[in-house]
Image 1 (cartoon, each protein chain N blue to C red):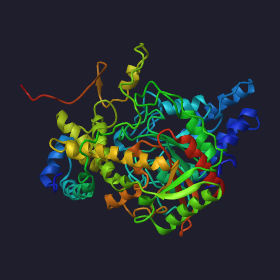
Image 2 (tube, rainbow over the protein chains, first blue to last red):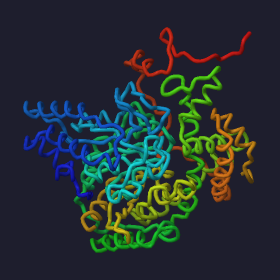
Image 3 (spheres, chains in turn cyan, brown):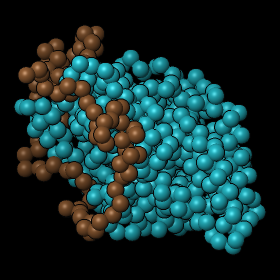
Image 4 (cartoon, rainbow over the protein chains, first blue to last red):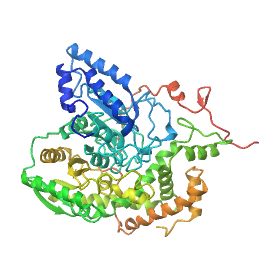
Length: 479
Length: 99
């Protein structure tokens, strides 16, 4: 199985929407093609926790009816989209990959899903993830791992591994994921697809099951940069239901403006020690390709990138321990029977959460406990400010920054499950962006020594998506 | 920051977090959490005197929407997803001891 763009139907999302709007193909036919491919191959890949075939067929027929009546169903007309299973979908099971939410059907729908469907897109299913988005391999799902479509003995990355694998396997032309420390970009890189972490606040988090609220951001997976831009443009923009959403319109993304004269900085701290040689070689090749297109490339130092991982593993667990306090067996999800309420809380959470989630709740509760709050969480939040200053200094001399997306290509299932710290290092290249609140995109750029995909990451300052997408489009064209 | 994490610390934190951990988990977490906290020492070493903490990268303060009544979640739909309900409310096990 290969990750050719639009492998499900031989068309990209841009082409599907164009053809559905013109009547050249029906949305129903598009949906049937993808459902058939899921039926044939997802038994092996396990990208989906739930395939919503009947609802997708009904939505497709409604789109086709509108086209027949001469209406325009929108810029994503008839485009199937896979949704990470931490995005709430009213009436459709939403588990966050956890036993504690098994069987839960949300009473409301996430803003991003409402916006996609309003633009004509068709949700086709819910994808697998590390429990509550905590992990880098999708092996922490309570419902079993997802396999990398390029090599079934390897992980797809994580935590949005199901969404990355769905696009890579041609099960859907588009998918949504969430990225708290790299959970969109790292699996996209390992699966050879495009993945975008937008500026914090660019996309509403309403209806996203919260992990670390000051870092979480929803974004798209796609086979092409143009498809990712189409999806992001549909979901971005202010939302009254998210007080952290940026209150002004999201800027338009133009992919055809080239990179001539742009200044591209290669992040020194993310291109040496700890990064595999074959991955570094692809980043150098990407820089050379941009130089050939008229960009000016040079190395740049972002000193804070060295301690970003440490700061992240104080901040994210602290916020998670607070967010996950709501899973107490009272209002939703599972409950373990016990004689009194305190015992019920403890037993429900002990049985309902997996090992990694418990580990992070413990770490976060410790970091927030009396006497440690300022030393851990407070210090880490101040470290974010220092990191943002380092980025600001770099962006005085450069328009975008370039780095690997992940330190290695896809690793073997089981290779890192016994050592949490080793697993955490998978996100060393992506975490600095989350802490800064900046956008990042990964674009497939060739393969490593093992023949598996390598992703190159383009970073930009807050709300710098327009220049970031220009560089991504240039890399895609020359990759 | 604390130099190391003891087994007692882990038991205490598990109680705060309402997690009825097994003895095996307490052992394992004592070791694993200590390793992560040790890795965090580079953050502890930063000079952050006079540096303000960051929680949002964009300049947003007290965002409020217009105070207009709007539909809320459907009560029956919400209660239908609860582990136990009674008379339109969430039912929980005993909260207080016998009088």
